Image (cartoon, rainbow, N blue to C red; front, side, top):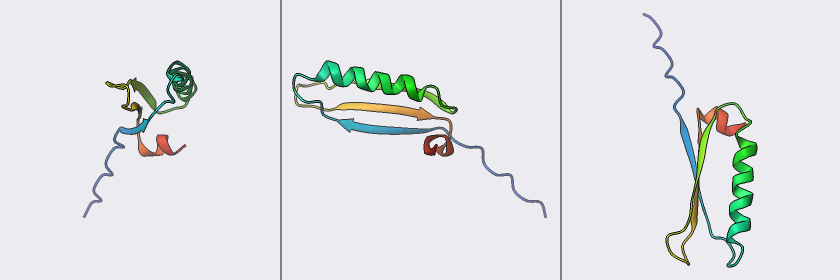
Length: 74
């Protein structure tokens, strides 16, 4: 009997929702984009998106994608 192959690592996304302080939206976006730039230096990082709120009282969505759970956990 042969061992079944281990499944390949699947890409994974991390989604966070945050609300910026009123009047601090530009600063919040700058911090998040800086975080994306630093995270981009790590192996397994596939990309990220910052989705702005659709209404004044809504939240930002931060989506970060990694090649595997192990890459996210680093």
